[in-house]
Image 1: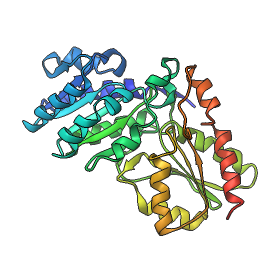
Image 2: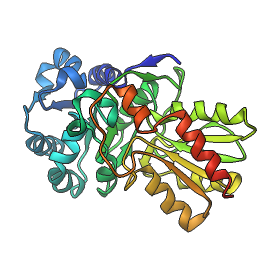
Image 3: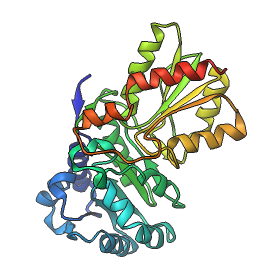
Image 4: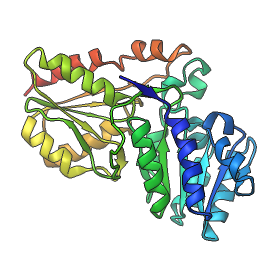
Length: 311
C-alpha cells in the first residue's frame, strides 16, 4: 500500500480551512515543527499562538479563546495533551462544552525510539471518559483530512489522534468522512474485525489471509470511539457471530472495552482482542515495537481463528 503522513496532512488541511474561515486559531506547545502546525503559523502568524512547554496553560488559553467565539485547534504530542493536561481538559473544556479541537500527533507506540515515556497508550480511555467529547482515530491521511474538516464545522470539544510515521493509505481521494458512522471496509459472514487507526490496514491484510483459509471476515473501520456506532456493531455481531477488536492502545478503556460494553448488553458473541495488554512498551523502532507487541495482521489472524472456534 502507498503511505502518507497523517500529521502532515493535518498541517496542510489547517492552512486550507484557515484560509476559508478567519475565525480559526491554532495553539501549540513548542512542537509545531513536529505536529505540523508550523504550516499554519507561517501563513497566519497573527492567529497562531505558541504556548511553550505549558500544556495545562494552553488548554486554559484555548478555553478562553473558544469562549469568545473562536474555533480553536490545539496540538501537541498525544502523551502530553492527554496526561499532563487532563484536569484542564475536564474542567475547562468538557464541563462547559467549549468548541476546542484537540489534534494530537505521535499517538500510540509508533512514536518508537522516544520510549515509553512518550508512548500515548492511555489517551483514548482518558478522552472517552470526558463527557461531551468526540473521539476520533483516523485510519489514514485521507480520513484525517475529512475528520479535521468536519471537526472545524461542528461544535463542541473533539479529540483526534494521529501518528508519527507515515501510514498505509486505505482510502482513495473522494472518500467522505462522517463521524460516528463506522465504515464497512470488507463484507464477511464468519467473523467481524473492528479496527481503528493503524490497525485498519492490518485488519484488511488479516482478512485476506483468512480468506485463503476459508474464513470470511467483515472489517469495520470504527474511526469514531465516541460516539460509537452501536448499530453497525449490533448488525455485524448478529450477522457474523464473532467479533475481534484490534487497536493500538492498552486493553483497558479503549475500543475493545467500548465494543464489549455494547455487545454484552445487545448481542453477546465470542470476542477476541488485539491490543497492548496491560504493560508499557520499550524503546525501539516503530516497526519493531509493532511486531514485538503483536499489533500485526498475523496477530489479528490468530485472534480471529481462536474466536471463531468459540462460536
